[in-house]
Length: 165
Image (cartoon, rainbow, N blue to C red; front, side, top):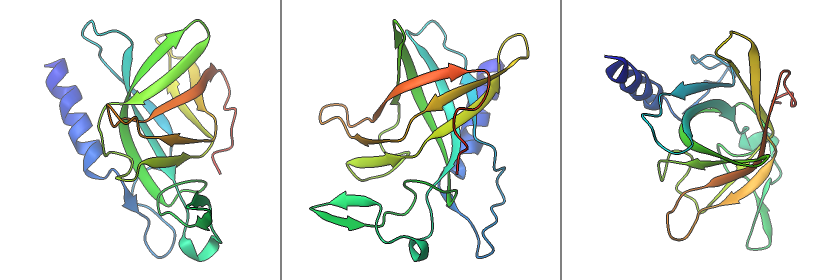
């Protein structure tokens, strides 16, 4: 039953994965940047769902991604809250180094790169204390073999390290 509930939650969340905001700048999705923990069933590492808003309107952008030596705007990438994303990642920790690798090939983009802004994603630990998974700003490139993205330099804190602007 728990597995069915988790899969249902994941399916409902993914239906609105990259939904642009309406003309007023408002989205009908919650603006919270957060983590949803998915039961691991004995897998190595832990799988989590990252819920976040990313990107900005092209009207306010003179170019934010360097492609072929030219700065261009890419919808749903970089700073801002233009698109709502829900993407599952596999967390791995070796020593103090934490990485997150996407589990679906095209959740974030069909491009071979993704501009991730600084994000602090909140959740509660098993004792009900607030915890933040912090992802520093980075350009990630699709792995040529697996076609997945891997975010590096993640860290946990008890307060948000980034303002999520």
